[in-house]
Length: 399
Ligand code: HEM
Image 1 (cartoon, rainbow, N blue to C red):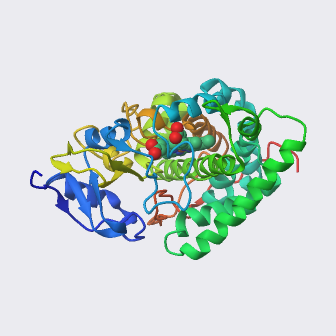
Image 2 (cartoon, rainbow, N blue to C red; image 1 turned 180 degrees about the vertical axis):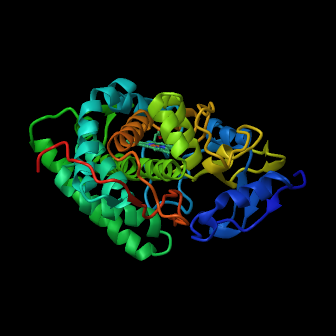
């Protein structure tokens, strides 16, 4: 065995204090041996350069997902993210159809209505909590119809999923209870659908289509639905609230967007890089490998830190700044390789619709001077609450 080189540091993405500014830890590690190691959560390594993180996401032969992608391990596998190619490839092929650019585009009008309905509820008031009244419900109302979950269940289900994301590690017993409740709910939903009229949504696909030549059992249907719901109901909200906060503090960027001085697709990628809603996904080394100046051995746990890649100054100069004209298309917020986020086209559409509609209807929205956002810990880092004020406006839909 060659001698091990890495930077030992305390890092834990469940630590609320560290997750207020995880980037300070990544910068410190990057300035030494850029392969970090923490003893927390059972011990894990983490590359901090863009290239190192990208490799961890892309090279599935060396960094497998089949040991699980959550740290600590989720109590049951999430599908298809906990699979490697070629098994994963067949699953992904079947699922892709619901999440293409075209599928997202076909929902543009519906998603615009979601934005207008939510903004209508607070536009006459002149103030709102943008997280709880706009960005979080926005996702559920936009994505649940695509998945096939009834909209009337969105608040209860959304709260349970959010609770799991942020509390499953600190309260594993409570976590199991909530997993079971969601499991019962989703399994019953699938059972009801088997007897009901066919629809064109993800749930229907999961109960009728072949995945790699086989039908899914109830457990697998649940595992795909759970992953998709985690992806759909949380991460884009963080990109929205972080971007709204940036715009509230940078009126000059609002003006540039509205005047068309920055192209929206370019700005959206920079917002998604800058906010990095998903921070950490696990892989396991399958062989001895050099990465970021250190060596991993088979069985080593590796945490691929999307935020470390996105804040590597060798890739993105002045990475701590949100620079709306920069080309950030290569950002690592959606991961890379086989598992690159399947929901990214919807995420861009929802984020763009949310921001454009806010600029059109509440242009002067602002946050109080000195507002300090509090971020949720866990693999999903998001602003907990974003109080905004603006000149009251009119509803677009009648009450
Ligand atoms: C800004 C918003 C989003 C971010 C930052 C994000 C981030 C990510 C990342 C980093 C991965 C890779 C996981 C890995 O390599 O282990 C991923 C995969 C995934 N995401 Fe997203 N996501 C977002 C929005 C969405 C949405 C709206 C959906 C809706 C369905 C979604 C569903 C999924 C699913 C199902 C996977 C697994 C794909 C696979 O394993 O092939 N995500 N996402």
